[in-house]
Image (cartoon, rainbow, N blue to C red; front, side, top):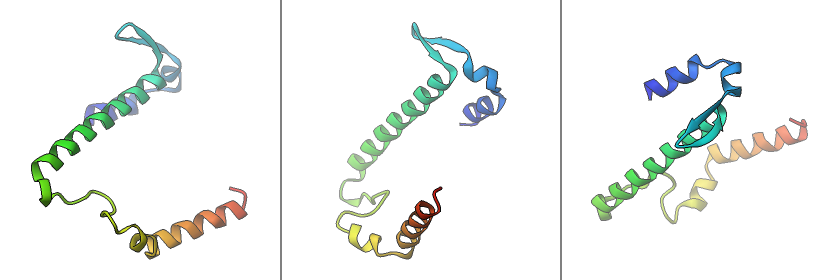
Length: 93
């Protein structure tokens, strides 16, 4: 990650408009960055899949536990987020 973020920090606006070739395909630098971040997501999914298989019934969900969505929706965090979103819509943001 440190290499990825260091590279991001070094890019200029002009760099983002350049075209590069990856595996014979031309991409803008922005497209290449999105491609790479998407690729990382695929690997994260693979790691989670394997972890779930290895932990089996001991697996602890990374998000809202199965069957607990209603309880989560009632939390102050969700309520305040929804209210903030509604307020931003009223303000035209």
